[in-house]
Amino acid sequence: MVMNFELKIEQSQKIVMTLELQQAIALLQLSALELLDYIQEEVINNPVLEIQEKEENDFETEKTSDNNPSNPPENGSFEWEEYFNEFEPFYSRDKIEFHKSTAASSLDYFACQEKNLQEHLTFQLKMSLVSGKKYLIGEYLIGNLDSNGYLQGEVTEHARFLGVDDAEILKALELIQTFEPCGVGARTLQECLLLQLREHKDVHSFAKAVIEGYLPELARGRYREIAHKLGISMKELQEAVDFIRTLNPKPGAYLSGAGDVRYIIPDVIVEKVEGEYVIIINDNIPHLFINPFYQNLVRCGCEESVNSFIKKRLDSALWLLRSIEQRRLTLYKVTEQIIKIQKPFLEKGIYFLKPLTLKDVADKIGIHESTVSRATTNKYVQTPRGLYSLKFFFSSSIGGLKGEVYSALSIKAHLKELIEEEKHNSPYSDQQIKELLEKRGIQLSRRTITKYRKEMGIPASSQRRRI
Image (tube, rainbow, N blue to C red):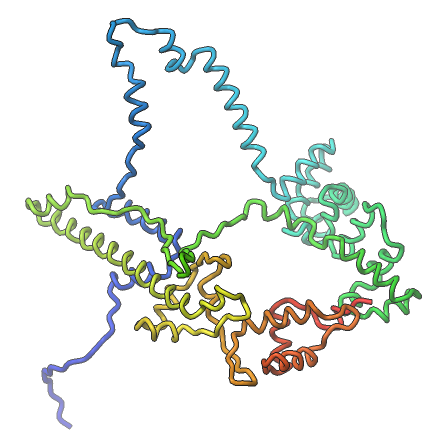
């Protein structure tokens, strides 16, 4: 076998992901707020990029020129009293008004600040006038409550960690359980409901017995078994169950999310104007431009290292501007096709939502479906029917008995409508729902109906039954 060295020239194709291409792909899947943060970071890192500042209001300009004390009256006199009234910040009348406005704004500020669960309970602990070790134990237990208001961990574990007796932990816990919201500080669902019964005025006569001994059976819908063991009628049991359902199983939930309120800003706005749908890209991006100083510096010539640095930054800035414009154009085209296909939904409602895939939109625009996926990720559209995620309009298709094609979301709407119209004492089983949907021309297996029902959080017929 002879081994030798040779040089060969051959052609091959490769897909190379340049940094610019990676940036364009990353920009496409950013939401409007994320894009704004990205631009702000690029402006900080790239000295060539600048944000055009908004021009001052003409009214403010006129007001500044009118209030300029450097322009004295024509007769040469100067109204000093008027000057002090308008411009002196420590003048007595202005000082009083300033303190009034500051006090009002401070009260408004503190009034609008919502307390979370721990702050709310700590305030009540301070108002309970306990001190010393009991206060410290109570503060520790409040810190160990979860977002729903339940105590995490066992009493013995907390006592061992703090180096105190179990009785001291239980005394502090009993104090916390008297605080608002009622039911907070419980260790189990049963204890939580019993705490609320203790503070309730009109308690049903059999509610306590059901909570203490039959919560698991109640969750499984075994009403006849519970009524037989308690020796009461089904009607009395239903009344007790209805009362129990008025209690709150998660007493601390409404306070735990006080500081987690998140607002959705739509990336696209669709409005109906004279019978046609108009698409507006709501990115609110500030106007970017390239600083002319650096452009002139490159033209005039400078050191080679400085010139190379500026050129790289200029190329990066120009590519960013192109990527932003390309993102806007792609998002517009994708939304335009979605609106064209889902126009019946916008006109008539959820029952007319058509099945749609990423490939359907990609083929009509002439781009890859992965690009459509990125363009619709974390994006929301404001329509005349409400605010929706762009991913909402994509759903699988299910064939009907007469050749029609239904969207999975529209079928779920039919399923929800049937369950809302059923009789409470004899709810539909999954098999009965299957037969009712077939009358509407929708063919589904019972297993699929069960799957959709669970996805919608709807319990089985045995748990929906009311006496």
